[in-house]
Length: 163
Length: 266
Image (cartoon, rainbow over all chains, first blue to last red; front, top):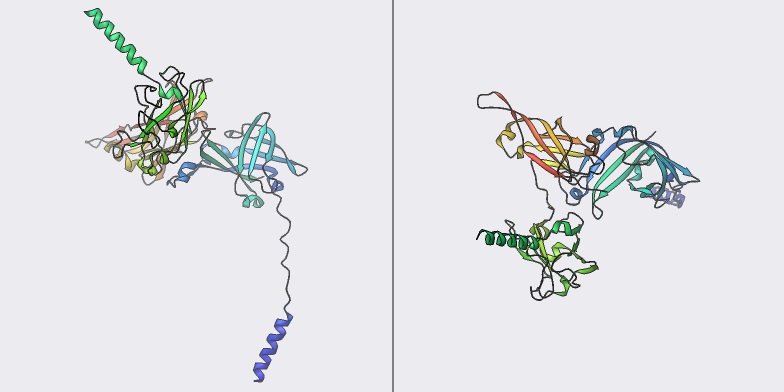
C-alpha cells in the first residue's frame, strides 16, 4: 500500500513538473537565390525521353556526360540587391546548350524559383530549376525541355557543382 | 491512229495529274507526331483543288484501312457522305486555309491500342465536291507501348544538336549472320533535306553495353559541319562485325542499314 502511494506520488510530481513547451522556431527560409548565385561547373548531363517516361517505356533516360566535353561548361550567376542580375557562360569545348556568353537571368518566383530565363538581347533560353534539395550541398540542377512546338519530347538535366 | 493514241495518253496523263493532291505539302499537323491520345490540330490548304473558294468544308475521316490486325473505323463525326454532320465542319481560316482539331480516341471511340493510323478527305456538306480523288496517306499514331527493335535510337525524337545514341540489340537481329557476328563498328551517314549526304561517312568502334547490346553516341551538328542553308534531315546507321564462314574462315559481316529522321526540336 505504502509502495503504491510512493509510485502515485512520484507520478504526480512528474506530471506536475511538466509544462507545455513551445515548438522551437524553424529559422528563416532558405534564400534560394543566394544559393543559386555564384560559380558553377557542369558535372553531369542526363537526357530524358519524355514520351518514354509518359508511357513507362523501359528506356527513359541516359547519362550522356561522356559523349562530349560537357564538364568544361562553366556558368556564373550574379545578384543585384538580392535579385537575379547577370550571368556568364564559359563553355570551353562543351556543346553550347546555353548559346550566350553573357546576359541577364530571371526567375518566376524569387522565394520558390521553378523557372529560370536566360536572356541575351532579344533571345531567351527558357529553362527550369530541378529539385532544389541539393542546392545547400552545392548541386544545382537546371533542366532544358525541347519539343516540336506543341509537345514536350526531350529533357536535359544539367547537374552543376559549385566551384 | 498513232496520233489518236498519243493524244489520248496525253489527256489521260493530264487528268491524272489534275487529280493528284499533295497532302504532305498542303497539310500542317500540330503536334507533328502524335499518339492516339494526343489532341491533333491540322491545317489544310485547298488552293488548286475543286474546293478552292468554298467557305464551308467538312471532314471525312477513318482509321486503320488496310492495317493488318486492326479494324476499319469511321470517324464519329462523318455522318453520311451526302450529309456531313455539323461536328465535322472545319474552321475557315481564310485564304483557302481550313483547320480541324480532334482527339483520336474520341473521334474513333476506341482505346489507343486499337488505332494504327488515320486517313481523311475534305468535302462539301453534300459530298458534291471533294479535295481529291485520292485519299490522304495514312498518318501513323506513335505507339504507346514499347516495341522492341534490333536497331534502336535514344531518344526517340532528336534534333541535330541532340545526343543521339544508336543501339544494336543482337538478340533481335533480323539475319542469322548478324545474330552470330561479333559486332565491331557502326557506320553512320548524315543527309540533308534533298537526300544529299552531308560530309563524310563515319565509322566508329562500338561500346559494349552487356547482354548482347552495343551502342555508340554522337551529336550530329558537332560530328559534321552542316553547310549554311542546309538542314540535317536524317541519318542512316549500320552495325558491322566479324564472323566465320562455313570453312571457319574469318569474314566481315555487313549489317542492316536503318534510317532515322532528325527533327527540328526547339
